[in-house]
Every structure is written in structure tokens, then in C-alpha cells.
Image 1 (cartoon, helix red, strand yellow):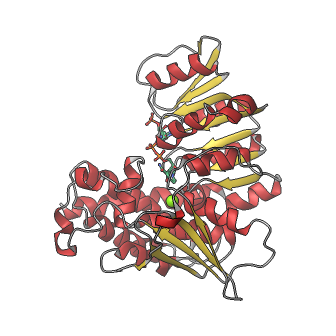
Image 2: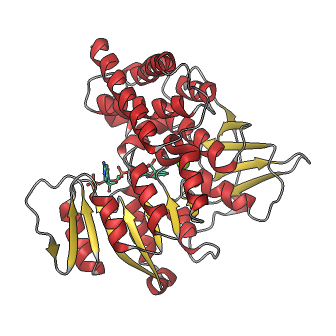
Image 3: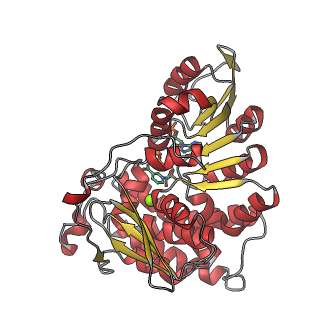
Length: 384
Ligand code: NDP
Ligand code: MG
């Protein structure tokens, strides 16, 4: 029986992971012992009772909570997730926190768990080689959960040749059919209604701008060491990504789109223990479209800064701030790109001596994130 901790247990990935744990093989082979949330105590309480958890963390406790509840230790406050990960000392940690905050949780998991099932793409986007080198140093296994990267990970199992090219697939997001001229008027409600995937708020907005695909380009570059990356639209999201080899062979990862599949794979690897529906191949048409970069300028911007850790970090920070402002009605959908663009330009000026080099410490990563957020907030204020 392997023990598991889930950071972000109340989120979209966290909930789907719990559904996986309630299926046959997982019930008998994986024991959930801890989890964390930002503020959702009601959800945590249910999980503590249902799974008899050893420890949980709540970062923003709005009420005075006890230190223990039904034999479960409760950590509260800023570093609570790191403390709970250490206390649980689980074999596996699934890091499904949203946003940059997940980076510290990933680092903690690298210290205390043997395997890190990594949904939090920001850990790789912002932490880059720093995080991967740490995992290498401590001989820990990182298995990506992001569907495209899980697909590539699976496609490369057994290959000794580095692929010539990686092709990430994209759905195009929730407003993919709205005329470009009308995009500035789309509302948060329209954007949050994704045609294929059901996900947390930020990643759903990021799918619509394709900032998400930009983050995934950075993620793929770091995880697989390939810089030749392309993006194609596969509207029904049945092809989860493609690797291209020099002999003209393309390997594609095909299946119904559902995050439970990569979540389950990351936990049961190297075995496949999840049962899921199979599409009818005789009725299947596989189609790809080129990306229209006029519709998705943020993805072009991501390609322009690929391989520059400081700017990749700024790209993520500015987007997190801009998406929050869009969702609260402060800025337009199309402003998200301009906020990221201007923030990156400013950061490029401020860090002109260090662009292009890898991060050497966590402090440096945190500093770039903090400065980028401040700059992005200033641009948002100016735009109003
Ligand atoms: P959600 O917004 O649905 O859930 C986020 C989870 O993280 C919640 O449990 C939330 O707690 C917790 N959380 C948020 N902020 C903090 C914080 N500062 N400190 C501690 N915990 C926090 O996100 P998703 O599940 O959609 O995404 C999670 C990660 O997985 C993201 O990095 C995303 O990019 C990635 N991912 C998600 C996919 C999906 O299909 N959803 C697909 C591929 C990748 P609370 O409920 O209390 O707010
Ligand atoms: Mg993805």
C-alpha cells in the first residue's frame, strides 16, 4: 500500500484524483493520508472523516480552527502545506495546487516523497531547471499530470532517441469561434464555459487566451529538453500530443479527454490500472488546424521568450494577476495579453544582465515573481 498526499485536494484535479482513488485497484493499493486547501475547510472536514487523514493544511483559515480534528493534525497559515507534506511523509505527493503557490509545495514534496505527480505546471514554468535539478539530486521521480505532458512522457517511454520535434495539441478554448473583433467584449461567464474540459477558473481563462499553451510550451521544454516545439489545434482534444522523430515517424497519444486518465497513470506508473471508456475508432476523424496567432498573441509571445527562465516566470506572474482582474471585471479579455506583454518588456529592462540564464536559488525565483506581479498591477491600474 502506497501512501498519498494531495495538495489542492478541493480543486478540479484534486476532486478527480479522489474519484480515481475510489476505483478498484486504487482502493486497494493507495492510501490517502493528507491534503491541503487554500480556504475550503468544509471540504477538508469531509475528507478527514472519509479517509481518516493523518494531517491537512489550510493556508487561509477564516475561523479559529483547532490543531487537531478527529485525530487529524491541522496545519494553518502561510507554510502549512509544506509542514503537512513533511509531517505526512507520504510515498507519493500529487501537487494540484493552482498557480505559483504550488512551487513551494512541489519543492517540499521533492524533499519528502519518492514520487511527485505534478499537475501544477507553474512549478516547472517558473522553477524550471532549479526544480528538476533538485529532483535529480534527491533521485525523486517527477511524473507530469498535465495531459499533454503525460502523453509525451508515455510516448517517450522506451525511446533512447530525443525527438526532433514536440507538437502540443490545443482545443482552442471557450471562445475559439467568436470573431476576433468581438473578443474584447467577451464576459468571464462566456470564457469560463470550456467546450471540452472542466477545469479550475484560471486554467479555463488561460485556455481561451492560449496562455495555458504557452505555459505548456515552457513546461515541455524543461521536462523533455526539446526546444523545437509546435502547437496544433485538435478541436475535440482526442489527440493529447505528438512526438516527431527524424525518420519521419510521428507518435500520437490518442484517447477520450479526461484528466482522470493522466492522474491515474501518474499514480500507478509503470502500470496502467485505470479503466476508462474507449472511443469508436471506425467513426473517428483526426483533424488538426494551424494556430491563428492574431487570435492568440500570448502564445506567440511565449514562443518569443522560450528558454528565458526570468521572462517565463514574469509571463506566468503577469497572467495570474491579469486573469484575476479579468474575472473580477476590472479589465477586458483582450487586455490580458497587453498586461503580460508590457510586464515582460519591463522585466527585460530590469534584469537585462541576467536574461537567458537559469535560476540559481528559490529566493531568486520568488523575487522575479513578486516584482512581476507589482509591475503587472501597476499596468492594470494605468489601463483603467
Ligand atoms: P482549481 O482552481 O480547481 O483548484 C486549486 C486548488 O488549489 C484548490 O484546492 C485550492 O484550494 C488550492 N489552492 C489555491 N491557491 C492556493 C494557495 N495559495 N495555497 C494553497 N492551496 C491553494 O485548480 P485546478 O485543479 O484546475 O488546477 C490545479 C493545477 O493543475 C494548476 O496548476 C493547473 O494549471 C493544473 N492543471 C489542471 C488541469 C485541469 O483539468 N483542471 C489540467 C492540467 C493541469 P481552495 O479550494 O480552498 O481554494
Ligand atoms: Mg494541459
